[in-house]
Image 1: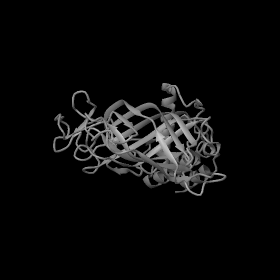
Image 2 (image 1 turned 90 degrees about the horizontal axis):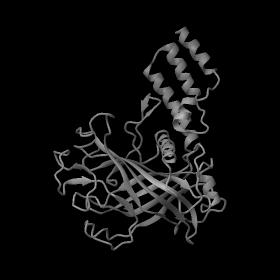
Image 3 (image 1 turned 90 degrees about the vertical axis):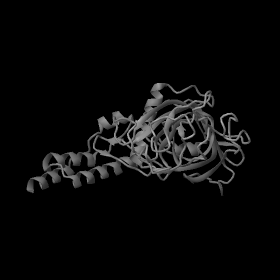
Image 4 (image 1 turned 180 degrees about the vertical axis):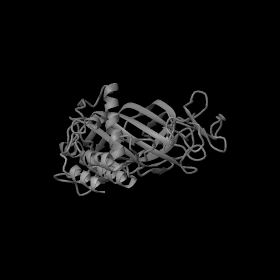
Length: 365
């Protein structure tokens, strides 16, 4: 109608407004992308809430926001093959948190081999340590790494990244909580909805080295956060598979990281290292298993001036640093739609739940 057309005309000419509430909630030091958000408010105020228009506005706003948070053309993808995860068991001396039981009665712990348990530690395997049993203390395979993709602009890039390698030190389970991944706040042990969220701390160190053994990237104070959706009938994932949303979060080591790599992956110089997990695979349901995954290292803009200790022997992150970093990382995951992620239960401005590309398969458990 004429009133609606008039409001649209005026709305498109309204100056951009500062997103104070969003900026504060996400912890960004600079963030202003509200033209479409403001237009949506004007439309709803004058024309009523129309589903099609609302979704169009939301998608335009998300596109605008994500373009400022994570420039997806910049990334380094590192593959880790045969990381050792474990122990994960009900056996005395090796107990770890119980997840669910396989079969028709997933929420009754049988204390048997059909139970699935969370791994206590993730680390690189030197190989020939054990046969995956609890008593052997490890796996027979050796962890290997390679660079899968380098999408950054180096002044003098090598002809090939063959021979480049990566490493990460041990991460240990610090927090584990079962959740309902479909209906937040509902009991976790609801058929088709069960999962868990967990936090692994080091603080670990992540490095990438060139084919001469020189460090080109080092991040310290690395922690790992994972949300896992269980397979049916326990959870919403397909039978025999899991859905994983996970990321590594830390701080760049200023002294050790090559200047060009740092400028490309931390253009705002906020010091935040963020690596999204993707392409996970699980070696087997044993006490120790050989798991593999990609780490997608991408920039995070507007880190809010987080401290960046330039030490290869870092002190543990403070609770404030960890919480601020989590807000940045979670917001970037939600808005950027990184490959390898699914979002269950997250919301943007309490308006919409986003579902992103899922790493579906048999990820670390």
